[in-house]
Each structure stands twice: as structure tokens, then as C-alpha cells.
Image (tube, rainbow, N blue to C red; front, side, top):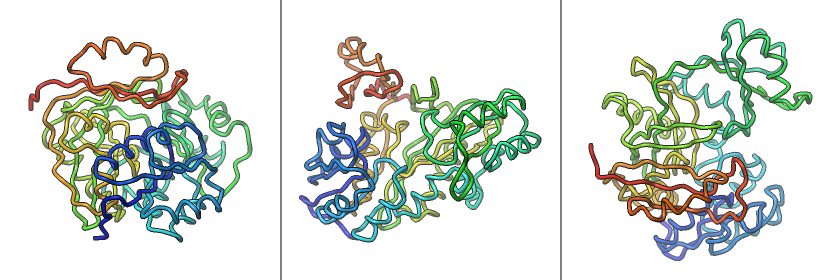
Amino acid sequence: MQRLSPGATLGILGNGQLGRMLCLAAARLGYRTHVFGPEADSPAEQVATVSTVADYSDETALATFSAAVDVVTFEFENVPAAAAAFLAAHTQVRPSWRALEVCQDRVKEKQFFATIKATTPAWRAINAQADLEAALKDIPAPAVLKTARFGYDGKGQAKLRSAADASAAWNAVTGGKAVQGNGAFAVLEAFVDFTCEISVIAARGQDGKIVCFEPSENVHANHMLDTSTVPARVSAATAAEARGIATRAIEALDLVGLLAVEMFVTPAGGLLCNEMAPRPHNSGHWTQDACGTDQFEQMVRAVAGLPLVDPARHADVVMHNLVGEDVNDLDRYLADPAARIHLYGKREARPGRKMGHVNILKPKSG
């Protein structure tokens, strides 16, 4: 393994709250951090050793950044392909661009799930309104239309309650503009009858060792994660299969770092894979206070060539996202000895903006 010595610099592409928490984890292990992103006074910039504020298309800034770090990783996967390729040609990048490429595109992602024998909801690739109208004959409404790339927290999505919604849904995801470029622009997905949503976060080191955090049960509000509860209310067999899917996925991608896999649990106890992300994940924030090693430290360990450790849970936990004006209701958490508050340093609370999260701990029940 290529182990980074204490004092080495971890480069992080992206300077949001996930980058902030990666920086804090890296500092605990004796590493410096250098974050790169387009926004000044960002959550990660506030705590990083060094920060570069530049556009991802700025090759001069990217070259200076790559020369100043010992390895590069990502806090989010939707970076321009050209920037990722440029960095990979100049320095070691973990995870590899191949893993990012699969996770960036819903079509490639769903095709990948099939290769590891993981089931997904019924879907069709869509490149025009006519494609959508034809697909609705095979996948009748209710259904959801999603852009193939650059969608998150409900962005780039439109629900179809009947086939009559096809035109409005297509205009909603395209903004009324003509579709250009290679590959499918969107996917149509069937609505799923599920009992709950879960996610599993797997870590894989340079030596190929894989460890998984246990599944979290996730509840969304307004297309955004609201709470993650652990232990999840699933059977031991379902939990084991969920970890198995995450393990197969991270191994097949030959990914060094983290992979979060979101799944639906059907009434029969089966699993349908929704999507995955090769980075720390909002649904893994509970690990910061309920486990001996959290998702951020595990990622730093993997990228830096350190051994991964058993992420055993020592407490039950509910993670609450603090979104928008939620951050103004901190007093009840500040007075609660079971609450662990994590704020992201954002000055302005806007509707839909993630301002922080809080983990509420309870004695471990099982």
C-alpha cells in the first residue's frame, strides 16, 4: 500500500460540508488538507489547511493544486469529467475516475447494478418526449422522470401521476430546452411499493479489505433526507443482503474510498437498488457519534493507505438534518445531553439549504 506519512497533504475536490468533515477527520490523523472549489468562505475552506477557490475548468489552478497535494479525493461525484481526467494525469486520484463515471450517470449506474446481480426498479432510458410517451406503456404511471446526470435532493426530477403528465414532466426536467450531447438525457423509473428505504456505506482500502457500516433507515421530506435511524427496522437477513450488495459494488468498481448504496426494502423483504455515491453520504452522518470510527475517518484511512477498522456501533442513534430555518431551533438540542450537534459554518439559512445535522444517541438496544 502507498501509505501517506503524517504531515502529508490530502487534496479534496469540492469544498462543501462533506469536505469540511473530511478535513476534520484528516486532521485527527495528522494530515494537512487542501480543498479546491468554486465558492469562497465555503464550509470546507473554513477548516482546511489550504484552500484554492477556482472554477473546475481552470487548468492552471488545477495544475497548481495537484502539485501541492500527495493524493486527491472527492467530496462529491458531479465534477466535470475534464477536471477529473486532468487531475488523474498529474497525481494519484482515489477513487478512480472509472468509479466516478459510473456513479455520475443513472443509466450506467443501473446497468452496473445488473452486472453485480442487484435488482433495480423498472426503468427506461429517455432522450425525447416521444421516448417518454413510449416508455409509459411499459412502465405505467405513477412514475418518476429523472435527469441521468447532475441530479440530487430532488433536483432534476418530475413525478408523473398519469400518462397525460408526459409533456409537463419532460419540460420540467429539460427546462424547455432541446436535449444535446451523448448518452441518455433522463431515465423513467417505476414507483416502488416499499416498506422503508435503507442505505449501506462500504469502505475499501488499498489492500482490498472491505468493511461496511450497518444499514440506516432513511426518511425523506421534500425530496431531501430528513432522518436516518440505526438500527434499521429490517431483518438480519435483509441487513446482510444489503451489506452484500454494497460489498459486491465497491469491489466490482475497484474503488478505494467509500461507496454509499441506497436501497428500497419491499414488503417481502427484498431489496431494490436506487442509487450509489462514491463519497461520504448524508445517511452516514450518524456514524460520527455512534461508532468507534466514522465514515469520514474510514475514507481518509482508505485514501491514505491506512488500515481500515471495524466500524462497530456502540449506541442507537437518530440523525436529524437541520435544513433552512431548522438551524434557528438549536436551543432544544443544546440543552439535550444526548444530542451531538454538527454545524457547517454557513452564514445564511435559506429554504432547502443544509445547515447542519444533529445525532441523538440512546443506549444500544441491539
